Amino acid sequence: MSTIDNKSYAKVVQNGVQAVETVQELHSTGYDAEDIFVLAHDQDRSDRIAEAANANEVGLKEEGVFKAIANLFRSRGDELRAKIVSLGFTETEAAFYEKELDLGKVLVIARRSA
Image 1 (cartoon, rainbow, N blue to C red):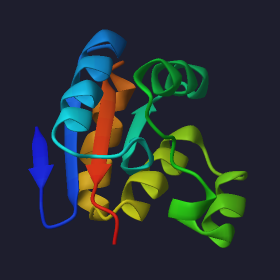
Image 2 (image 1 turned 180 degrees about the vertical axis):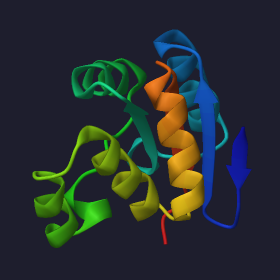
Image 3 (image 1 turned 90 degrees about the vertical axis):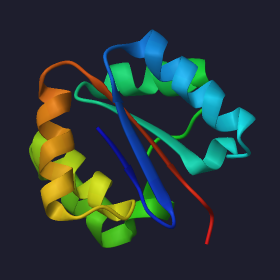
């Protein structure tokens, strides 16, 4: 499933290789590395894929201080949904994507800088 609106694009892929390919496609269409995010259910996997793909991870800039602090006390699923919402998606969309991440898939999100 892909979601496209004025600012955000999301694509669920099966694995890290497909995530890297998707990030490369986004780079070729004009997205900058700081505008592309990779999420996997496992934080270490997210880190590895983001580094290999030259993509970003959702951080303080996207979430804000209070949400980032709150994530320290959330389950990984709640944290992922909050990160997805912080990138412009609805709670319903975030719940869908988080379930896909539970299945071992990877989420690639791109958004145009404001």
